Image (cartoon, rainbow, N blue to C red; front, top):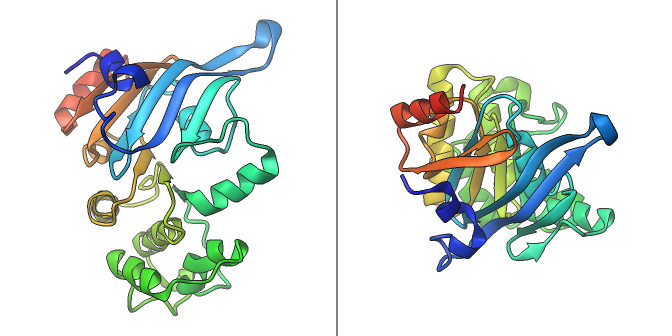
Length: 258
């Protein structure tokens, strides 16, 4: 394994010839002040290439959720810059950032956040409705087919299994053709068989739908589906693995004290 500095600092990233979907440069995030000040991220620089599947791991309190929130524009750094699809977002005015997230960022959470009164198709296309954008029927059909819900789009969420609802949430994240999809513990509420199917879908999303996926997880099995696993410890980058396996991830986490 190469040094994490060689992989993750923008000046030395091996993906420089590729399109970069997500970039953090010298990002610091602190909360509070004075004696109560907490540093959640300390001088983190990271590049995530487009059309890749990256997992973020680390011990509890390592800063992985903070990193995802900053990268997705849900929070702003104390210092440093964050860019999505080459667009600097860390200094955007809040209203402009809200519009940017709606149009260019997809989210998948442990809870599916589907509206029970809407059909699956209406839930999937809701981001377009909110953005006053027309539905591209060909893209909708493609996305629905990719997630395996073609025959279920007229049902309500409560008529679907948990795995099917998470598939609908993934389709909703893809419908705007975003710069990146951010998944926060997306299989945490699923049984192992259904979780595997969802992870295989995320893998397909990156490889066949040409979508960038960034996933925060504590599960080595989930992380093993990614192209690259990036590790955090105490708010700092703490190594990476390419072509990860469950055993290599587990061994690295053990070295981090998890």
